[in-house]
Every structure is written in C-alpha cells, then in structure tokens.
Image (cartoon, one colour):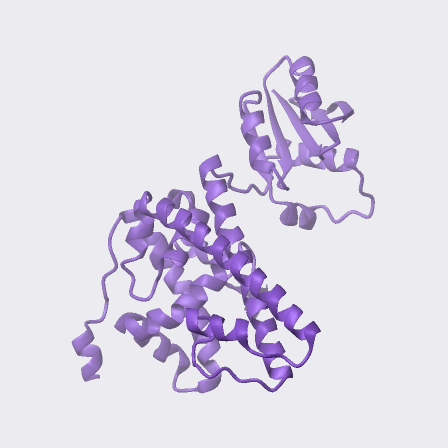
Length: 345
C-alpha cells in the first residue's frame, strides 16, 4: 500500500508518494491539465494506493475521477490542515509531503463529498441567493435615486406592476438621472426573470426530494430554507449525533477551556453561511408559529431584551438539530408543548 499526497492546481500538480513504512518514495511535479496527472498516476502507481488532496474549486469532479483509480480518496479540509501545519516554509512539494504524511498517520481532517447531483443543487441555491442580493442592490439604487430628487411614490408597493409603471413614467429633473433610472429598471427586469427561472427549477428539484416536504411541515420553514438544509446535510447518517449538525453549520460558540476556566465566545460561523442565515431568519417565523419554539425562546431570553439575539441563534441551533433528527427518522414535525397549554400559561 502506498500513500499519495496531491497538491493540485489547474496547470500544475505535485505528487508525493510514501511507502507502507512512511518513507518517501518519489516526489514529482506534473505540468499541464489534470489529464496529464491522471496519466502519470496510471503509469507510476502499479500497486494499490490511497490518495489525499485539499478541497478547492472542482474538488468534487477530481474526487469522481480519482475514485476509479485509487483504493480510497480522502479530501482534506483546507482550514483544518493549516491549523495542523503552521509552518513558515510552504511550497507545493512541502504541502504534498504533509498531506501524504497525514494520510499515512490516518490524521486527515476530511470533508464530505456529495454526489454530482447534490453539488449542482447546491450551486443553484447559491446562484439564486446571489441573484436575489443583486436585485436587492438594484432596488436600493432606485430608492436612493428617488430620495435624492425628493420624490415619493404615490403607492405603497413600488415593485408591483402599478409601481413599476409609475417609476418608468415619473419625470426626473436631469437626463442623466433618467438614464440611470432606465438602466436600473433594465437590470431589475433581468434579475427578476433569472430569479423566477431559478426558483421554478429549485421548486421542481424540491418536489422530487422527500426531505424538503418533510422539513416543510415545520411551521415557519419555507421551501428555500428546507431545500438548503437538505442539500447541505445531504446524508443525515454522516452525523453520528444531531449535536454535530450545529457545529457543521457554525452555530456553536467558540470555546477556550483550560483547567477550571471555560470561556465561550461568539459562534464559530464555520460551514455554509447561506444555510446559517436562512435558518436564523426562519427561526423568527418558527418562534411566532410554534408553541414549542416560542417557549424555548422565552426561556432563553429570561425576559431580557438584550438576550433576544442570543436566544434567536440558540433557537436556530436547536431547529437545525430537529431538522436533522426528522431527516434521519422520517418523522413529521410535532409540537412538544400543546398550544392550549401554552396559551393557558
């Protein structure tokens, strides 16, 4: 058995090979695309081998290509690898040797590699969120333009059909302002069309996945939150305990513990920020609509207004654990506290 550390880039790849005793056998740099690196591995590696590389752009495709060649492929978490090796000397050859050594010691901090369909699903979710953010910036630009000229829309909904018609026809004092208005409206129409198209595609994917409908039974959780949680959890069984899900999405506090001192700080904010944001936003609606979540929130705040944000994040953490448990067991949402009892209290 050989242990292969791979420091891979688009144009160069560095390979370090260790034997069964951990001794370096060969280190080489292959210049060119990934196909040359694959050909080099097929030619040089005649015995069984396991391979390790850091997660980066395209790591899923590389994983699929290497699985047919190596006995085992391990994708290392880049942030945690840097924590292990904080060396002042860094190069591709050194990094490949470190990855091979970690693989030999069975100390690689791995990442989960989802299937290609799940990876595409995640990309669609992130693309929609970026488009929504761009559309929001355009809307803010239009509002700023109106306020700069002291104009106030006569209707309440500026983004309705009637409001957009007024926005197109409103008279602006400068030709440059009218040009800016027209360009922003064109961007708004483009982004709205793209968001609508992506939303329809995501709704179709969600209807074909039972987990999205299952999480939709939680009062206050919409399809966007449900699909993001399902896509990023992917396989619920990869977490041995539901408590690990909160750490995966970065909703657990930082900890500095030594002897009798245990300091807890802000949340770690590791993992996908989009899911963390969606879950915390959905927590407000769950608190309003669920007696169980409302009771937990009020107990955590203790009647203190300054603890509302802390309690909201804690409810989001608890909600993620509930979602993971539901995906593992297939159970629908059920209230732990009857609504009548909560109202009487």
